[in-house]
Amino acid sequence: METRFPLGFVELESGSMEIYAPDDLFLNFTFENEENREEFRLMMNILLEEYRKLNPTTMLTLIEGEIQIETQYKFYINAKKKNKTRNQDFKSDEIEMNRLKYVEFQNKAISKPPIPDRAIEYFVLSISNNPGKIVNQIWLLASDADSVLQEETFMNYILKDEATNKIFPNPSSIMFISLTKLSQQKNLAGELALFLLGKLTAPQSEEVKRVAQTFNTSFEAFKDDKEVKNTMTIAEKYRNEGWVDGVEVGAEKATTKMLELIKSGLSPEEAFHKVNEERTTLATLVQSHA
Image (tube, rainbow, N blue to C red; front, side, top):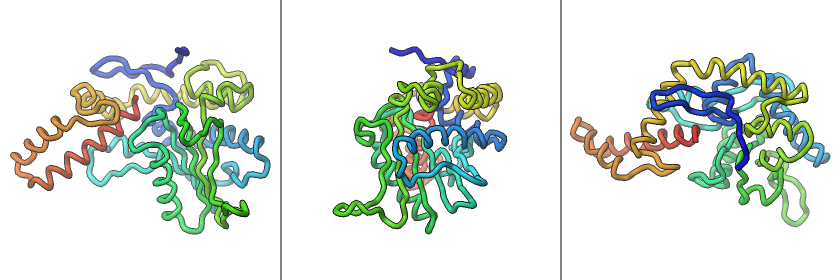
């Protein structure tokens, strides 16, 4: 097994927890800070530029012009509150270009629902919610998902005619990037992939040094943030109690919880919806720290 180097440790009641760059909560915390938005652009453009070198005729563009970035940080911090739904890790709105890029960091190749199903669902939602705009989905995979990568480092799926190969008028796409395969390459994108995977602590290129410095500085604030610790403690509590094992939630625990809620005055329907909502939220929280 290859050695991985965490950014550091967060001290919880249950003990120390290692934090790596692709951790969902940490990434959202980092890029929720507007001061780090240009490092987000730099990080993504390093990866996109590598793909563009391999495919000069691609219609996939870099992140350009004025950008507005939305993160899922508030989802994670307020996950137990009502009416909080998770969308995607990052939404980068290229305001002047009429383009959007949604970015998802995926740590595990196996998820529920499976990555192909989640990607299509997100793709459809992102297009329908932004009519008339070019929307690119970009998935950074820390573990290879063969179903979407098909043994390639980059896969960029677009709508095109089967017979003529002509592209649909709106060239929106879903891209998958294998960080593991990319990390084996001796170039700028490969060095960035090594850092993101925790296999490199001292980058040589100025660009990746800048990204690393941003991550390291952000981690110093992250590890002492009270809201962060509270959220991570909740996730650990339910993992240790057996509510969440991987991506599945114990039915016996859920049934017990429902009975408690019904005794407290909720109707069976209300109790079912509350437990089901909590199960989904907790599974997401635990997966983000897995």
